[in-house]
Image (tube, rainbow, N blue to C red; front, side):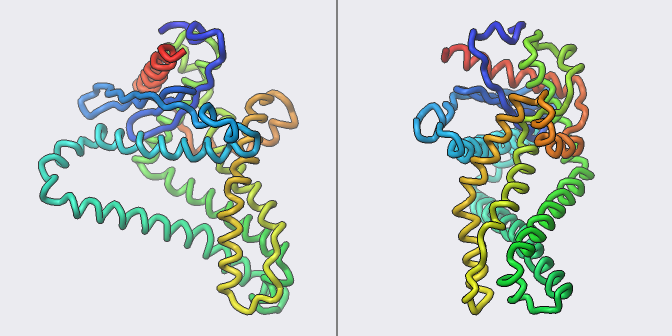
Length: 326
């Protein structure tokens, strides 16, 4: 396929995700994952994946659709990461050899890894910011932690949110120093360059992709920044009950509210991302996308031509499936 806009008279919205030694590309009705194996071959997995927004009128409503878009992206992303790990790390042969021997051990390891990750996320992005915020304010005002939570709730929530953002940025910076993560960030850059190429209408070639920017306003990195910033303002609207007598009540209230508000925050963030991408040349909307673009200086790196080739292959395979569906 040469001309990107020859596929359909309609504009096809394309998105993607970097995986291990490869790229996932999504279209409204299909997806493809292209991964380069250790022998240098590009292995592709593709399938139908109808957008959930097309299946149900309710989930297409503004400020609701964002949560379902995020949920489907996570589901598809995990599937793509598993496939890329099997190809790029050549784990399948070893798995087949030792399937009977250590299948139960592998499942236990996976469960342990997931649980450990959840605990670490809660510790780093919930518990530590909470205790730091309460400690800083209690020392500043000479009052107890409990009084800080009940009487200085607005300031407490703002400080708690700012510390979470700082921790998040620090985490991104630290993992960017890892060699394997840097490779993923290079494929992230390749994904953005190819998406920008597709949206330009030029021929889908490596030579054309090279000249495009590795930054894109409609990126998962930008989405995360929107989620974290918007969550600060939304969470500050909720005050801890003043008659609560224990920290447990506070924690239940805090966690419960955040879980319940997750679809709302995701919905608002998604609408901001869509608007900022649509009006990216508008001076006002550019202010909204700047934090995400700044962070992409870390989460995307300049890719090689080989990496761009993989990204283009992924897009072309997804578009072929999309074309047969039109």
